[in-house]
Image 1 (cartoon, rainbow, N blue to C red):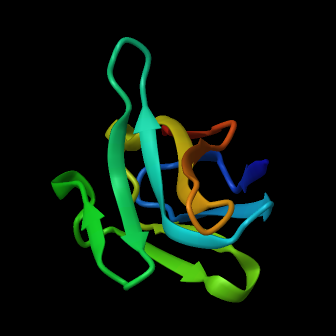
Image 2 (cartoon, helix red, strand yellow):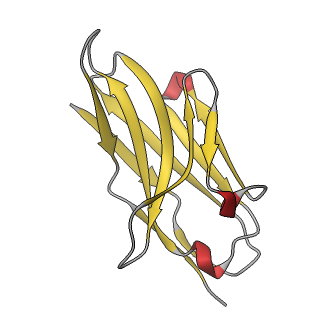
Length: 120
């Protein structure tokens, strides 16, 4: 059993910065990748940015140059530093992690979501 606990969401103004955190705990043999998705009502959940254990990252074009993902492997934690936030970044942000719980079994795990609202 794996748990992902997110923190750091909130209400900010356009141009502000915000940092999200997500800590994984439980039965963790090896983390394959960790990342962030977001979803607004009526739309599909979309990838924001993720990073695999080798350091390779994927990100949405809409956040290029503004959002930066980082990980603390010792703490099984992923961060999303968001800068120059725009109203269109408003969404519920979900942490995702692909984790091996033993040498042969892995699962996709999701956090509970944290609301980010960008509004003046």
